[in-house]
Image (tube, rainbow, N blue to C red; front, side, top):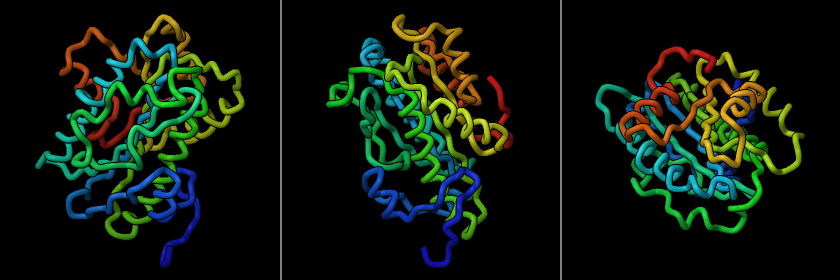
Length: 259
């Protein structure tokens, strides 16, 4: 940490070293920042995917959301000659435990177009109860740590903006029996609701076992997510990709809070 102050940044976390981040969230250490290719902004995207029992019928759609929608969008952005946007992507599955889909935060060129598989959702700790609030808090902390890490570097080297993106895919019913994290989540996201850089999206899957659409939207408001998105299975792949690009606000110069 030589040469850098270890104070909390605007995302609320003390910048960790690369080794500290890798030790906590699994190797490898974070991919170095490339100030020549990523000078416009560095977008950090963290997915938390609900892999509880009620979501099992939606697993094919969850896999499609990552493999056929998100990853191709990320790879298209990173290959574009018209933008210098850097990307790092993390993904966890959650139920009674939180299970990494892959370790750390990776750039698009390190992600396969078939990154997720059905057997990923059969690991111990999944296909049980839904610890939704714990998963949201885990995503907030992981994203906050990596945002602090990169902001410390980019503010010194280039002034590049760091834009965190938190996306939670779920049917919305926390079955852990504990609401103790609700106020903490609401306070953290509420304090960043007007930040240009920070974007939080609660993505709704209508399973018939979780919350109704109206109750899900109320939950989104209660937790202070900036946006609420109904993942429609009746949309074409391209329609979903357009919606995904819109929800992530990868190219906007100003985030517009609200649903």
